[in-house]
Amino acid sequence: MEKEEIKGFVKNKYAQAAAQDTSCCGAGNAYTEREISSAPEGSNLSLGCGNPIAHAAIREGDTVLDLGSGAGFDCFLAALKVGDAGRVIGVDMTSEMVERAKANARKGGYGNVEFRLGEIEKLPVDDVSIDLVISNCVINLVPDKATAFGEAFRVLRPGGGLMVSDIVLLSELPDAIKSSVEAYAGCLAGAALKDDYLTYIEQAGFEELSVLEETSLDPESLCSDPLIREIVEKLKLTPDKANEIAGSIASMKISALKPE
Image 1 (cartoon, rainbow, N blue to C red):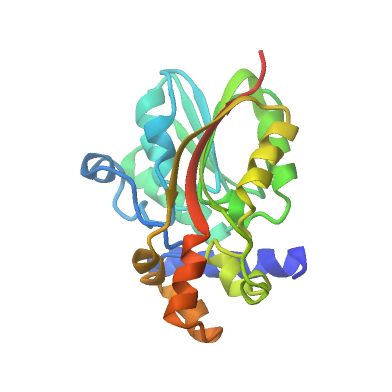
Image 2 (cartoon, helix red, strand yellow):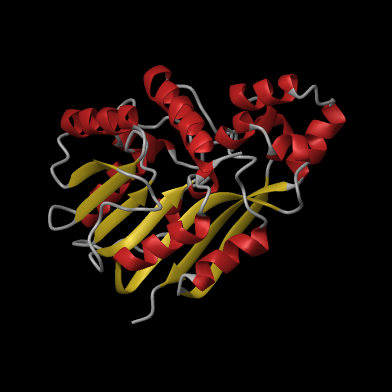
């Protein structure tokens, strides 16, 4: 698949998600009821595969950047922690998501949050201007993951942190899955092998890399996702094969630091 073909398909799917409240990832939701209720209604589209906010050491006054901010949910949770003296920036490549996030910010009265249209491989963010970069089930969708982590490193201040929840592979997927644009938008085909993913982070220059949590995906919850069901039906996968594929996928929470 060509990079532009992948990006176009993913943009289209996430534009649909912005308009219809449909999920594009089948990894569930890791947030508390208190967190969900604290954010504006309509900002949590259940597109993530973890909760990077739960593990992040966010301080009052920090500037936080969310890669692939969607409708703004993680940004709004971070905004409560950085306070009025801090700032949260969300970047998303889908204009429909950015507009929805901006509307949610206005609705919730968030003066310390802004959303920008842009790609993770070329962030519209100044050098060394960010204290913490977070991302939730998005980098697996990026064709050039090495460049994405390089960009995260570029914008971080020395001593700044990276906190990512994402989908990785424990073993290679079948060729039929890897070549499916539907599976790419469903957070499967674009996922990197675990060791490769960690290597991308290290090669970008990050240190103190730590896997905080690793969870294999539950086949039943994975296959309950509408887009994943579409993939299973299109590729005519048997239940056993679908379960085998689910067993090769994991959700990871990763932290790292930019050297002082």
